[in-house]
Image (cartoon, rainbow, N blue to C red):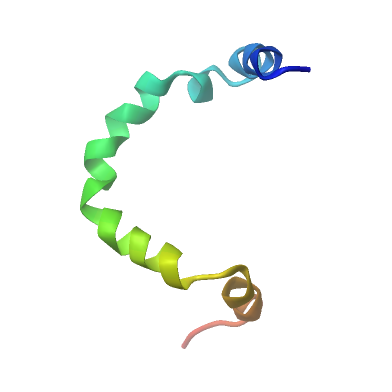
Length: 58
């Protein structure tokens, strides 16, 4: 199946995901956190996440 075929299926199964308009409404809400998230993505790796699994901070 090609990308267009998958898009057609996903649009039918999950219409809320297929519409880019619905996502754009939230951009203004998350914009203040952009730099924070970007920083986390730059220093967080799969190993960091795996090492933290199963632990709780007090």
